[in-house]
Image (cartoon, rainbow, N blue to C red):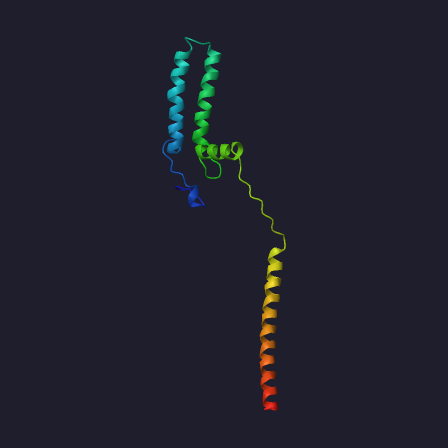
Length: 139
């Protein structure tokens, strides 16, 4: 029976082209091969084989790393920009102080304010009622 793998999250889907590699991985692997194979073949004429082998490794490793690297849904270039921005540029930090229980304090104060407004409203109504009663009695 044929089994199809379906990712749980649609964002994790990556279209595969050759040998289970994505287009990005294929391009980076192809670039590494195009650079390193001729270097290894023709580099033996100018340098010892051990030096050429190290040169091939040091050239191919970053290319392959750039193709296969993913961190928090960021490609290598995006991650590198964020990394350098975070560590090598001055950060803007704003100082603001908010006490831990400020929400509770604001709620308490608003409740007190409402109670005071209601009390003033009822007092003024009571005063008006008393004034009218006094006028009726006197008048």
